[in-house]
Image (cartoon, rainbow, N blue to C red):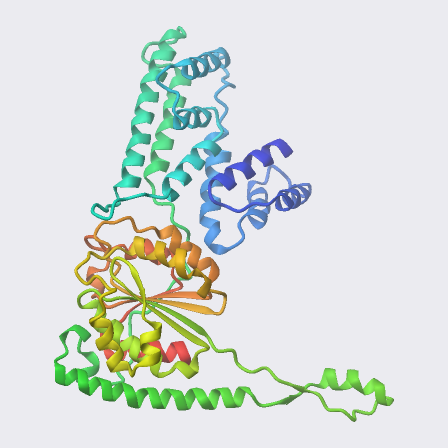
Length: 458
């Protein structure tokens, strides 16, 4: 049992589940109290030790079914006999094949023998490999071409299995062993093409909002006239003052001192049990830290400018606000908002030479630059706000970087100014990114923006 458990732990690690040695030991201890004929109890004991969160449970179920149901079907133990020698001969022939010496070929041969760890590792490397691209030519074809290469190796291996089974004296049409091996290759092909994003059932999707303001409150940011923009700026100033007052009262109430009975009685021992020194509890509310990534291309910027305006008008409600504008690269605009009034800051951003307004939006490159240069700004008190439509012009989305940001921050909130009917069309990567967000909501007008800011600060 220990050998089987170690093999499964290796498969889990290759499948992007973090499994430590102590967790393997704990699982082995728990399995001593489990009846192995009760698969539900057996699986529950392993899941309790290997799946650390709800997001990992879907991946664990997939790896458990692969290892214990699909891979552990014994090819060698055929009641008709004779399959053991045939299997060994076919595998030996495949390993000697001069055309099958790529690392992925060896991983696939191990997969045929019931060990999927190497193939899972190849898939992980394929999904997370760094791409070195020229600035003039960007695309997300790197992973696609890598997957296509693996598919070609699977097809080559299928042909080699047919030749090897014929050479071993089996039926030229393929015996039971060859059929099972081909079935496993079909399973490898399916694993290569299926969606393995983490389970994100806890994603908060906000679709409705209160009607705080009629008419102008329902108008899309992109459709506002210059006069309506000025009117909205006045509305935002009044709203900010109201929210700051409410927030100030909340912090004032949170800073009140309350009697700490336990600590008072503990210190009364110094005075023969008389509570001469009164102790109080002081638990001031902790202010959140904000990191905002704002797409400034096209109509998306019309929503980002108002959101940044409100955030910087309420800076005293947060411990820190760091903002970045991006199209194909990140530009730190924090200092601009700190030195200038909000409207003047917007003008300076729009005229900044650091932002390439003519470039194509590339979210993957933006996330990569943020991780390389600004990841130190993110901790467990940080709320990361992303304002953008998620349209990356078919560039590599680099969603694994968003997963790294999620691991370090308190939560990720994605505000999409685009109508929901278009979220999953064309080059939109929202369906990819939402698996790594804590909250996803539309933000096309003032009413939706007010709802979001109230939830954020109150």
